[in-house]
Image (cartoon, rainbow, N blue to C red):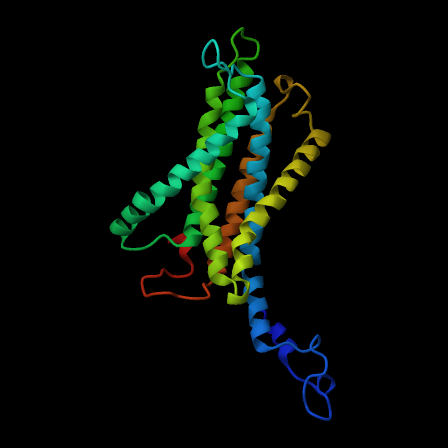
Length: 275
């Protein structure tokens, strides 16, 4: 694949100086190393695109959770009321906890049982499954909340915590695994860039989440000013459908993806997502 790029390293009479035989226009002629480095970046581009929808769904969920929290009972006792914007801390706490659990318990237990290591692409796939599950639970919770709108006692804000915990678990799986994939596949001259590629994807995703929310507001009646008269649960179901399609796209990309470097004999087959 990408063999056509090899032409960039082929010398022609137009590229060489007739007097000394050296290249007189470096913009027209690339070295073999430069071509191979560019191929390495193109190979991981489809996997990078799969991150965009995951980040978009997380961004939409973060915005919707604040709106939901504002219309729930946020009082834990007579004196303390949970700030609506602080609920995202649950995602960070959950992610940090499971990063530790993954490295200390889950991954070692999996390796002990199966005698195989979870490869980065497998970890990314697991993280995306947790992300889809989180959106589905958010939709169910919102449907339950809408049924309690006419009651005197609104639903407790604590019902919003389980989806946030689950999305944090998903982050613990897919975020660091994506960083590992890009760091291992990028050329050595771009290793510093590789560590920031995942963060860039999530940054773009949050802009896309804003665009998606605006699109839903313009084309549907699901997000009015008062969400008690809207259907935020339908927004979450759209994210579930998109997440399933994105997961299928990721499976296809992973099936055809081959690791650039095999570190040891215990490494799994590159088509690891289906194992």
